[in-house]
Image 1 (cartoon, helix red, strand yellow):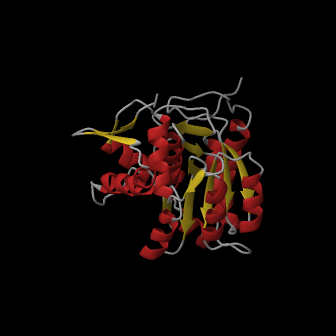
Image 2 (tube, rainbow, N blue to C red):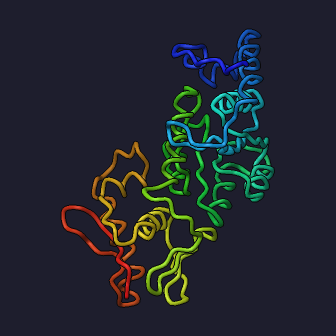
Image 3 (tube, rainbow, N blue to C red):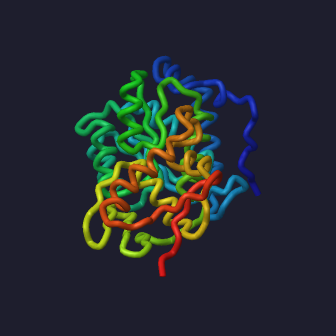
Length: 283
């Protein structure tokens, strides 16, 4: 019986980056090495949870118009045990997202037909599917636009493939949450959140929220009657590598209260001084 080859700590994969592969082409020995590993791994994909807590049946969609980069990422993901779908333009990528068979999207910005920002905008109208954006553009405003538009992470080419894999694992764990709540609809009192439609309403009236406001409220609703610390909320809402103001969660709580509590005369989010916030079940 054959077993998948063990991954070497200092293999070619850990030192090559996507930018150099895209420019210089793939050496034949590298292609042979990856294809050999793929033939082993494809017969050993498990539908369970590995020691990192990630389901091996997770499906990742790669939306990338540069064939070599897309193929390189695909082979790496297959080696890790993920299932992979690919699209070469924004419109095709959006169609595959709407099929409902995708767990995470690796999304390039510069795409034909629909660019990555527009694809992200349309995804966020209907879903909170994890999205990691890839781009050769290193402009700060591009990153801000992507993150404010609802991207879970943003990576600039060239990048180390190991970092991309780590960020994929993190995005999946982050969406897994503090608790796993198998609900498409979360509520407390007359406040209702439709997770699939990405909508919030109070007493039947729509409440318009930004992506971060929605995510903050979602974490608190998923953990009703549990005090969630500011640090945990910051990681869930802003990502593990957020380096900005530490009082950001307090700011977004004020925004939520101004849109819900102040408008409807209620007190949804409770402050636990020195710890964090919680939403308590209402009688």
